[in-house]
Length: 387
Image (cartoon, rainbow, N blue to C red; front, side):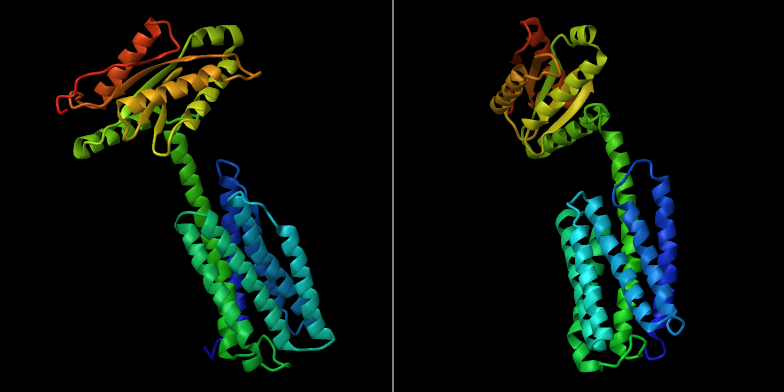
């Protein structure tokens, strides 16, 4: 890269970062829901662009001001990428401590400019600090992020960290105390290109992360009941048909619970529909807390809920139904009235022709539970001809 100087790299990268900042800002304004972390991501490439502008004023402004402002803006931009990720993934935001460390770093760099001029020491401080920031950012995304966009950002941050460590560890071998950042040494060109290109790629990663989150939110709204958060009837049946296919293919049993809140109409009439809605939400939360990972909870309609218990036989299904029923019976809250539920239980057999037939048996069990006095579980047994 002998024909490309670091200033040209910085200028081109700054222009592309400005474009990405405008794209992110436009996306933020058009988002259908509030999304934390997007504002810092919008500001981060803008600060990187401002840094490129300051570095481009080399020779027009005092060199010390260019060094101090340019590096401060670049550090702030990379720091805001990190802060945005912390907020986006709802992790504790530690910007105060990072800001303090950044100020201390700038003070130390100023010392090696004004008191004891040494380009190598400044490079070591800046590259080392940015390596730590990139590593912390990559560690956050690796632990808490998910999806292609997170993997892309982790790769970019790890590569950036490696470039920073390489630059910091080699500066005392390749540079002189009086060297400048505009020198055309290969190591300096790799350093400048890696740093500014990473800002662009991080902007792209942030944009992809926002897109993935929007898609997830729409998919979640389409598949989950807006009031209770349980699966919608359509998604519930899809899950049930999936378990039915597993049963037919691998003969792994599963069971269905059909639950109905007792005298729910009386609750609405006496306490009002807002309280009735809270009863539905409380019921959903209590049921979900008694289920295993892999079990499915859906709202069948009104005050009826369906639970699909994976790889669960009749005895275990009955135990699960009673555990849920007793939890609802014992629930006590000053905000909502006491309520109970009746539950129909059915376990798949070869006599069931499809998932709907199994659900129909659970419905018959629920009807018998209601007719027998409510607040009880009834399992409708049927002989399995494969037994």
